[in-house]
Image (cartoon, rainbow, N blue to C red; front, side):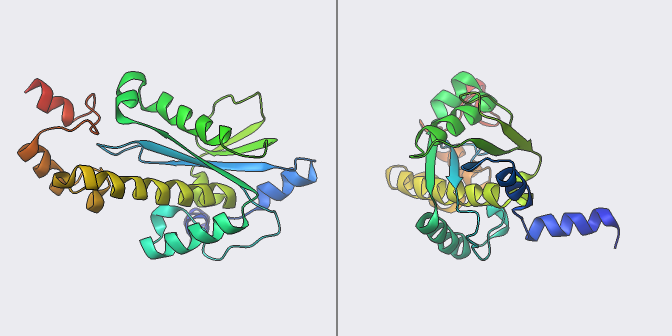
Length: 215
C-alpha cells in the first residue's frame, strides 16, 4: 500500500486530535471546530455547526458525517451534545443563498453558528474555508472533516441538524420528497420539480432550477 493510499484510508476512518493537542500546548484553551451541510443541495438552507469539546473526552465513531449511516450519526450527535462545552448551529435560507452566493452564505452560516456559542473560542479549526471572525486565529484545513476530530464532530452536528430541518420542511412541502433526498439533486427530486414546479425552498440561481425559470 502506497503512503498516499495509507494516509487517505487513515483520514477517512480515523479523524484525530493531534492538531488540537498542539494548540492546547501553545496555550489555546477553547478550540472550536466548524463544518457545514447542504452546500451542494438544490433546495433548503445551508447549515453550519461550531463545537467546542473537552480535549480528554473520547467519542467513539466520530468521523465525517458522510461516512456514517443515519442511526450512527444520530447516536453520535446526541453523545457530542451531551459532552460539548459549547455548540451552535447557523442556517442561511435559499433566498439569501441566491442573493449573496454559496461561498458568502457558507461563511455567514459559520459566523451565525459561532455567534450562538455560549463560550468565546480562542482558535478556529475550519473545513477548507478561510474567513475572519473577530480576528481569531484559524486553520482552514482541506478535507478537515476527514482529518480533524473537532471538524468531524461539527460535520455531524450540521448534518443531523439540517436533516431534521428538511424533515420538518417536508411537512409543508410533501410533494417534493424532501424527507427522502433532503433537497439534494436526485432523479426523484428532478421529477417532482417537473411535476410541481419550483418552491420557495429552491435555489433559483442554480441549475437545473434556473433552467426551469428561463425555459
